Length: 317
Length: 275
View 1: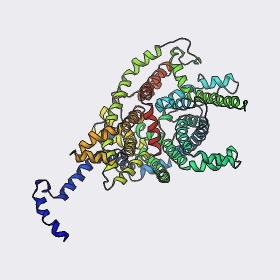
View 2 (view 1 turned 90 degrees about the vertical axis):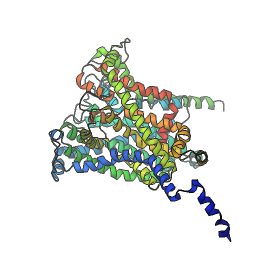
View 3 (view 1 turned 135 degrees about the vertical axis):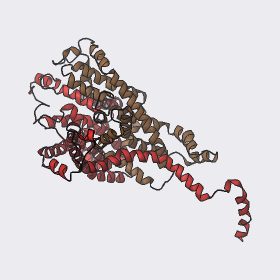
View 4 (view 1 turned 60 degrees about the horizontal axis):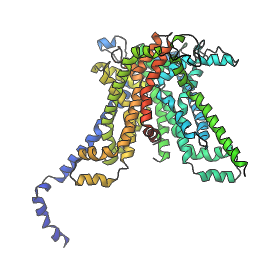
């Protein structure tokens, strides 16, 4: 019975010109138009992120010399680049410096950032103003911050040493000029750079924690430290993971700051995987060796990308 | 009871004092930058804690040496912002609204790009740029700098566009608007805030870029301020006053943006990093 009511209408609809084209073709055309919105971004990201990843792997098996850019010749050389890089003592040093730099920076940034986030969670006059002013260092490009710090840390005329001299504790520390001190100094500067970011995100996380939780803990007679350890930290865990993973990814590939502060010196004491890639490729024009170090850097980042995605998932967004 | 309030208030002001001290330590390098810039005659000597007089000769030297580089930075950054928004706004809309097969994979890929180290990109890009003749070109640097902002912008705008009510878009379609018209006339105006935030961050990323400027330029043709200052310390070791004046100038555009668009920046920080 239902078919009899529908059948007379169908020829009527088909006869109107609007319904004439094949609906499947309309749908396909609409899909195509929709892909037109997304395609430029996909192509862009493939060119600027996907392609370099692939190209770096290929380059790491090619022999580049300064002449390559005139002749265009970069013959394949098997695993020569890899064995050369791995046999070079500098690679091991750079890898170690990268790990120390990353671990030290994250530890310092996170602990101080967390302390400040907790501190600013209290209510006191001018809290909001002070909290926004602490972000001011972001206005300065990182390489410029590095240069400012280079002046501050200067052994003979830097203000830090003259301050230490005034209060009578060792005014001649060779912050950036001694191989023993340089890595530590670079870490300290990077901690300074990272504190605002850690503080802002952790502060945001702290504000999301329901007040009742803390009140309940206080009623149970928990001390402030105990409350922080047993209530705040576990609730804050997803935010902490995100902060640490994002911090890791921006720290492990550091280049700007180290070039501005020490150029990788003195005596390669602050050479990291990032600066070593730069040195190999853009100073010695051995792009094959640079690609090898770059690939190691990618591999390390990839391991942490897995953590990042996990963190994103637990975040539930 | 009466004694309670003064102690509590004193303790709160105590926190303010502590906060000011923390801030003083954190902002000291910025102060020192300004202070050194105002003492251009100090050269390689120690810098006084306070500028004795208002000596602006460091600034005038910095402007004559680095003014052109500032303009280069401005041009490159504006170009990068334009490219970034042109590419990422439609994509954000498409990924938020069309339910295309593969959308999730693309969003996932966008997040993944954040882990690719810049120097690795530069390594491969330089070689392609040599082949394409894009080394030492404004357009080449704009493209590379745009890549710094695109993933962030897509993620940020997409999360905003997802929340536009479906009825609004359907109403436009019923009125006969095609997808492009709907996007331009309805979606973009409604997404104004996220568009501004994305553009702002794309500008800041590009403005503070040093690595692409360093690696994709071999001559002095295209020299942004970050590269200019870096080379300045190599050439003017004894002239810290001008170097610091140039550093102060390099922070000015960002400072202006911060004042003009405070609330967008706060939105970007929380929206971009946690989501």
